[in-house]
Image (tube, rainbow over all chains, first blue to last red; front, top):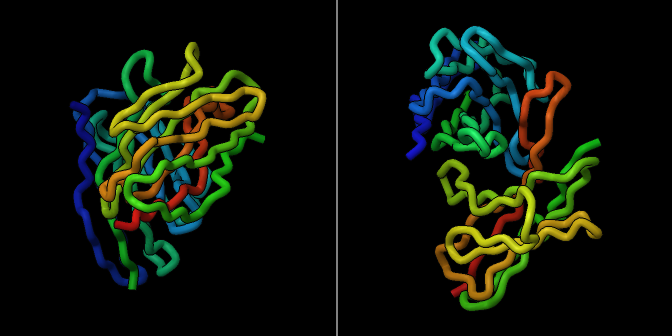
Length: 114
Length: 116
């Protein structure tokens, strides 16, 4: 079974704090993705990584950065958290050969910035 | 531009009734189409997918979907809904970005409520 784990299910941070969200996969896949999910806005791609130390901006990268130092771990960083970054964050990886468009998701992190 | 439209934001059905969730896409090539389900507080789970071949595809939990190229649609159906089907449902189409990397373009989702 594909396993994508995220470091926290729920997180509460203060405005201005630096926030790290961690995602770990056990499938040795090159690609990893970070989305945020908001009611009425669906899933929006923040960043993705297609290999260690490689990253590409998604649709809404502003206010975020990412780190991929090891293949299994992809971190989303909020340099200075703001209230408009209160959201649910989902990490995903693609399926294997022949299923590259499929996405397998972690359980998500509900981040509240106060 | 590539896009996915789910016209219904919320749908309420009675348990045991049939269900159809609509999905329309805009994509130039032959699409790779997906339906995902998200139960409250959970991540997304793949329900079914269409790549090619038979236009009626079967998925998990008794769901099916039909690809209609002429209508650019990929509607999700279930003949008899169970209370546990209450969830949010997302339609998506596979695409390539400018760097030729694969990604999914998502609809905004349909929230399904099931009355007992």
